[in-house]
Length: 83
Image 1 (cartoon, rainbow, N blue to C red):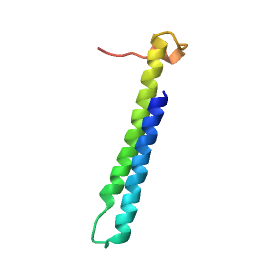
Image 2: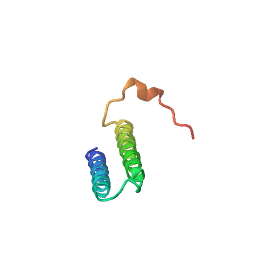
Image 3: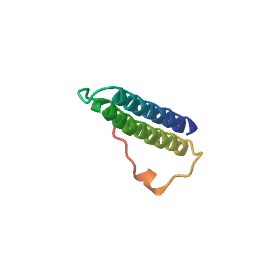
């Protein structure tokens, strides 16, 4: 689970770097240059990072339950995967 958290932190660092690029370019350019795509990309990357983290944590927990290294919560028995 630590690797999922590490990947989340790496992605958030990239978000912060993109925001810094946006701020730097904005300070050195005119308002004629539309920089909104950079901010939009940071929003998408933030959501993607959270989505990846949650999916990875759920996947790891489901594997732990399947391998009987973690107790099975009541909701797990109701979870169905269609094939």
